[in-house]
Image 1 (tube, rainbow, N blue to C red):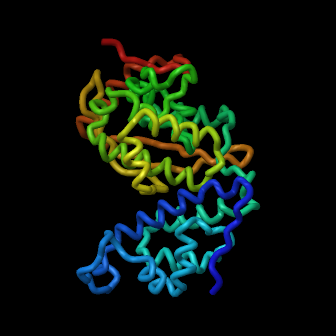
Image 2: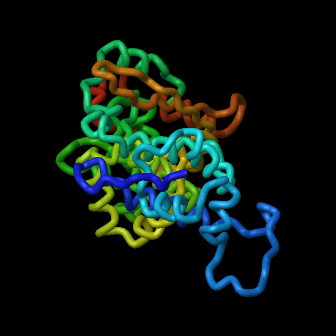
Image 3: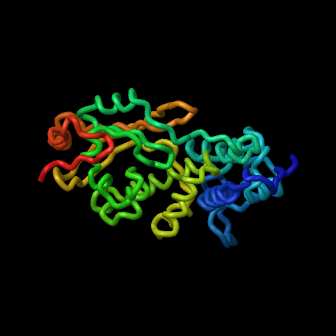
Length: 309
């Protein structure tokens, strides 16, 4: 098998450092025992050696070395699947590797899966109709671009945060890493921060030429050591669902489950619809009801709602 070719021209080479960092980090995480290899005593670096990964994937060491340097354009999906199996990638990591390869192809240079589009009124109506479930629509950059009244009451500290800036748009990464209050608001801040960065990293794999996304990552990298550390780990998460625990300044601890759904929009844009629900009969449900009772029916969806003290 010939080594993957590397094209040194054009903007589609932008994601080479991401490819390199991802593959190196995954290889470093693998201990020999997990893939049936002897541990040995002369390992100077953690994880597997390149030649071991190459042998497990059924390719030459030269070929894998070039792949790990970012030369991924033109590599077949079957070979990438073999590399994914050799590195024991989970489903999200495998998808991310394939997305990196697609983004590296010349035909993808000007293709954008996620675009900034106006949210159609029927989508806002749908979100507004969920009166007992905080719901919002977010972009790949994790901007909240549509929300219902209960979401704005629940996330009032984030909507009121200086991190919204002149844009008037709440953004999860900015709030997590640039507002000190986020550590008190999110009961599981560390897990939430890791997940936020991992979701952002997956989006960067899909859209390496999104200038606004690159600017956001650059801003956070320059201002937040925590973000820099997490970004360098190259962890990815395609779908973020589970349990959210918030320490609300007005009603106290609220625990909810949340689900994420793809929301296709005009111009091939795809955003996520996120819906939170509290378990029926719990204190958290009672506290959501209190917040819901404080939300004024005619409040503009563009402005955050703060319940009265």
